[in-house]
Amino acid sequence: MATFVLIPGAGSDSWYWHLVSPELRAAGHDVVAVDLPCDDDSAGLAEYTDVVVDAVGSRAMTDDLVVVAQSMGGFTAPLVCERLPVRLMVLVAAMVPRPGETGTEWWSTSGYQTAVEGTDMPDNEVELFYNCTPPALIEEAMAYWRDQSGTPMAEPWPLDAWPDVPTRFVLARQDRMFPADFVRPMVRERLGIEPDEIDGDHCPFLSRPEELAATIAMPLAR
Image 1 (spheres, one colour):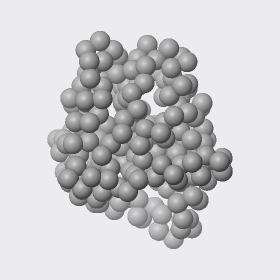
Image 2 (cartoon, helix red, strand yellow):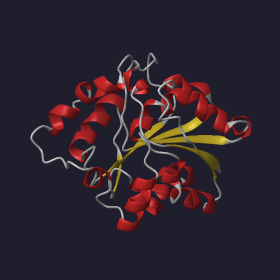
Image 3 (cartoon, one colour):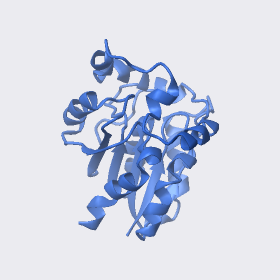
Image 4 (cartoon, helix red, strand yellow):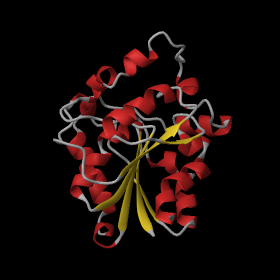
Protein backbone atom coordinates (compact mmCIF):
# COMPACT_ATOMS: atom_id res chain seq x y z
CA MET A 1 0.00 0.00 0.00
CA ALA A 2 1.04 3.61 -0.49
CA THR A 3 0.75 7.12 0.89
CA PHE A 4 -0.96 9.44 -1.58
CA VAL A 5 0.20 13.04 -1.33
CA LEU A 6 -2.58 15.18 -2.82
CA ILE A 7 -1.64 18.67 -4.07
CA PRO A 8 -4.41 21.11 -5.04
CA GLY A 9 -4.51 23.54 -7.92
CA ALA A 10 -4.69 27.34 -7.93
CA GLY A 11 -6.83 28.97 -5.27
CA SER A 12 -7.71 25.58 -3.80
CA ASP A 13 -7.02 23.65 -0.62
CA SER A 14 -7.18 20.13 0.78
CA TRP A 15 -11.00 20.18 0.85
CA TYR A 16 -11.09 19.62 -2.90
CA TRP A 17 -9.75 16.10 -2.34
CA HIS A 18 -12.28 15.24 0.39
CA LEU A 19 -14.23 12.78 -1.80
CA VAL A 20 -11.13 11.06 -3.19
CA SER A 21 -9.37 10.60 0.15
CA PRO A 22 -11.90 8.14 1.66
CA GLU A 23 -11.86 6.09 -1.55
CA LEU A 24 -8.09 5.71 -1.27
CA ARG A 25 -8.25 4.93 2.45
CA ALA A 26 -10.92 2.31 1.82
CA ALA A 27 -8.45 0.60 -0.51
CA GLY A 28 -5.91 0.49 2.33
CA HIS A 29 -3.81 3.53 1.45
CA ASP A 30 -2.77 6.48 3.57
CA VAL A 31 -3.53 10.04 2.42
CA VAL A 32 -1.86 13.41 2.96
CA ALA A 33 -3.98 16.22 1.48
CA VAL A 34 -1.98 19.44 1.49
CA ASP A 35 -2.96 23.08 2.05
CA LEU A 36 -0.62 25.36 0.08
CA PRO A 37 -0.03 29.02 1.01
CA CYS A 38 -1.76 30.10 -2.19
CA ASP A 39 -2.90 33.51 -0.90
CA ASP A 40 0.52 34.47 0.50
CA ASP A 41 2.41 36.80 -1.86
CA SER A 42 5.69 35.99 -0.09
CA ALA A 43 5.40 32.27 -0.94
CA GLY A 44 6.81 30.93 -4.21
CA LEU A 45 7.52 27.48 -5.58
CA ALA A 46 10.22 26.77 -2.98
CA GLU A 47 7.80 27.54 -0.15
CA TYR A 48 5.05 25.45 -1.76
CA THR A 49 7.49 22.54 -1.97
CA ASP A 50 8.55 22.99 1.65
CA VAL A 51 4.92 22.83 2.78
CA VAL A 52 4.35 19.53 0.95
CA VAL A 53 7.59 17.98 2.22
CA ASP A 54 6.78 19.03 5.78
CA ALA A 55 3.27 17.58 5.49
CA VAL A 56 4.67 14.20 4.43
CA GLY A 57 7.09 14.21 7.35
CA SER A 58 8.32 10.84 8.59
CA ARG A 59 6.17 8.93 6.11
CA ALA A 60 8.93 9.53 3.56
CA MET A 61 11.17 7.15 5.51
CA THR A 62 8.80 4.19 5.59
CA ASP A 63 6.05 4.51 3.00
CA ASP A 64 5.72 4.26 -0.78
CA LEU A 65 4.86 7.80 -1.83
CA VAL A 66 2.57 8.68 -4.74
CA VAL A 67 2.44 12.42 -5.45
CA VAL A 68 -0.78 13.56 -7.14
CA ALA A 69 -1.26 17.14 -8.35
CA GLN A 70 -4.09 18.96 -10.11
CA SER A 71 -3.85 21.95 -12.48
CA MET A 72 -1.27 24.50 -11.22
CA GLY A 73 -0.03 21.84 -8.79
CA GLY A 74 1.88 20.45 -11.77
CA PHE A 75 4.54 23.09 -11.10
CA THR A 76 5.05 21.90 -7.50
CA ALA A 77 4.77 18.11 -7.77
CA PRO A 78 8.06 17.56 -9.68
CA LEU A 79 9.91 19.70 -7.14
CA VAL A 80 8.59 17.46 -4.37
CA CYS A 81 9.84 14.44 -6.31
CA GLU A 82 13.35 15.93 -6.21
CA ARG A 83 13.18 16.12 -2.42
CA LEU A 84 11.44 12.87 -1.48
CA PRO A 85 11.73 9.20 -2.55
CA VAL A 86 8.59 9.17 -4.69
CA ARG A 87 7.39 5.94 -6.28
CA LEU A 88 5.01 7.58 -8.78
CA MET A 89 3.82 11.04 -9.81
CA VAL A 90 0.30 11.48 -11.18
CA LEU A 91 -0.76 14.74 -12.81
CA VAL A 92 -4.50 15.40 -12.99
CA ALA A 93 -5.69 17.98 -15.56
CA ALA A 94 -2.38 19.66 -14.80
CA MET A 95 0.09 22.15 -16.18
CA VAL A 96 3.35 20.50 -17.29
CA PRO A 97 6.30 22.91 -17.06
CA ARG A 98 9.61 22.94 -18.86
CA PRO A 99 12.96 24.03 -17.33
CA GLY A 100 13.14 27.79 -16.92
CA GLU A 101 9.52 28.34 -17.96
CA THR A 102 7.31 30.51 -15.77
CA GLY A 103 3.69 29.75 -15.15
CA THR A 104 2.80 32.99 -16.88
CA GLU A 105 4.76 31.97 -19.99
CA TRP A 106 3.23 28.48 -19.98
CA TRP A 107 -0.06 29.67 -21.42
CA SER A 108 1.65 30.57 -24.70
CA THR A 109 4.69 28.26 -24.77
CA SER A 110 2.59 25.15 -24.11
CA GLY A 111 0.43 25.88 -27.13
CA TYR A 112 -2.60 26.59 -24.95
CA GLN A 113 -3.44 30.03 -26.32
CA THR A 114 -3.25 28.80 -29.90
CA ALA A 115 -5.36 25.72 -29.09
CA VAL A 116 -8.23 27.66 -27.52
CA GLU A 117 -8.15 30.65 -29.87
CA GLY A 118 -11.51 31.03 -31.55
CA THR A 119 -13.23 28.46 -29.33
CA ASP A 120 -16.21 29.18 -27.12
CA MET A 121 -14.48 29.25 -23.75
CA PRO A 122 -16.94 29.83 -20.88
CA ASP A 123 -16.66 33.25 -19.29
CA ASN A 124 -17.53 32.19 -15.73
CA GLU A 125 -15.86 29.91 -13.21
CA VAL A 126 -18.77 27.50 -12.78
CA GLU A 127 -19.00 26.59 -16.46
CA LEU A 128 -15.23 26.60 -16.89
CA PHE A 129 -14.26 24.43 -13.91
CA TYR A 130 -17.38 22.62 -12.69
CA ASN A 131 -19.43 21.75 -15.78
CA CYS A 132 -19.81 18.10 -14.66
CA THR A 133 -19.96 18.71 -10.89
CA PRO A 134 -23.28 18.34 -9.00
CA PRO A 135 -24.79 21.76 -8.12
CA ALA A 136 -24.66 21.20 -4.36
CA LEU A 137 -20.93 20.49 -4.57
CA ILE A 138 -20.35 23.56 -6.76
CA GLU A 139 -21.93 25.78 -4.12
CA GLU A 140 -19.77 24.20 -1.43
CA ALA A 141 -16.64 24.46 -3.57
CA MET A 142 -17.12 28.17 -4.13
CA ALA A 143 -17.10 28.68 -0.35
CA TYR A 144 -13.65 27.11 -0.23
CA TRP A 145 -12.26 29.20 -3.11
CA ARG A 146 -9.18 31.20 -2.08
CA ASP A 147 -7.23 34.02 -3.68
CA GLN A 148 -4.25 32.79 -5.70
CA SER A 149 -1.05 34.83 -5.48
CA GLY A 150 0.80 35.40 -8.74
CA THR A 151 4.19 34.91 -7.07
CA PRO A 152 4.77 31.23 -7.99
CA MET A 153 3.53 31.79 -11.54
CA ALA A 154 6.13 34.52 -12.07
CA GLU A 155 9.08 32.31 -11.08
CA PRO A 156 11.06 30.24 -13.63
CA TRP A 157 10.55 26.54 -13.00
CA PRO A 158 13.88 25.67 -11.36
CA LEU A 159 14.63 22.09 -12.44
CA ASP A 160 17.05 21.35 -15.30
CA ALA A 161 14.99 18.36 -16.41
CA TRP A 162 11.87 16.41 -15.50
CA PRO A 163 12.59 14.27 -12.41
CA ASP A 164 13.51 10.63 -12.92
CA VAL A 165 10.24 9.39 -11.47
CA PRO A 166 7.55 7.33 -13.25
CA THR A 167 4.88 9.81 -14.30
CA ARG A 168 1.27 9.44 -15.39
CA PHE A 169 -1.24 12.04 -16.56
CA VAL A 170 -5.01 11.84 -16.07
CA LEU A 171 -7.02 13.76 -18.66
CA ALA A 172 -10.66 14.68 -18.02
CA ARG A 173 -12.59 14.39 -21.26
CA GLN A 174 -15.14 17.16 -20.53
CA ASP A 175 -12.55 19.59 -19.12
CA ARG A 176 -13.33 23.04 -20.54
CA MET A 177 -10.35 24.73 -18.91
CA PHE A 178 -7.77 22.34 -20.42
CA PRO A 179 -9.57 20.79 -23.40
CA ALA A 180 -8.66 17.22 -24.30
CA ASP A 181 -7.54 18.17 -27.82
CA PHE A 182 -4.94 20.50 -26.28
CA VAL A 183 -3.88 18.17 -23.45
CA ARG A 184 -3.16 15.05 -25.50
CA PRO A 185 -0.41 16.57 -27.72
CA MET A 186 0.95 18.66 -24.85
CA VAL A 187 1.42 15.55 -22.69
CA ARG A 188 2.96 13.57 -25.55
CA GLU A 189 5.41 16.36 -26.35
CA ARG A 190 6.40 17.31 -22.82
CA LEU A 191 6.25 13.95 -21.02
CA GLY A 192 6.52 11.44 -23.86
CA ILE A 193 3.53 9.48 -22.59
CA GLU A 194 -0.12 8.91 -23.46
CA PRO A 195 -2.56 10.30 -20.89
CA ASP A 196 -5.08 8.13 -19.11
CA GLU A 197 -8.60 9.40 -19.83
CA ILE A 198 -11.66 9.58 -17.61
CA ASP A 199 -14.95 11.46 -17.81
CA GLY A 200 -15.18 14.67 -15.82
CA ASP A 201 -14.48 18.39 -15.76
CA HIS A 202 -11.40 20.33 -14.63
CA CYS A 203 -12.13 19.20 -11.07
CA PRO A 204 -12.66 15.43 -11.40
CA PHE A 205 -12.02 15.02 -7.66
CA LEU A 206 -15.51 16.53 -7.32
CA SER A 207 -17.25 15.40 -10.50
CA ARG A 208 -15.82 11.84 -10.70
CA PRO A 209 -14.14 11.08 -7.33
CA GLU A 210 -14.57 7.30 -7.40
CA GLU A 211 -13.29 6.99 -10.96
CA LEU A 212 -10.39 9.34 -10.26
CA ALA A 213 -9.38 7.46 -7.11
CA ALA A 214 -9.43 4.14 -8.97
CA THR A 215 -7.43 5.62 -11.83
CA ILE A 216 -4.65 7.19 -9.76
CA ALA A 217 -4.32 3.98 -7.71
CA MET A 218 -4.52 1.68 -10.73
CA PRO A 219 -0.78 0.98 -11.21
CA LEU A 220 -0.49 -0.05 -7.58
CA ALA A 221 -3.02 -2.82 -8.09
CA ARG A 222 -1.31 -4.35 -11.13
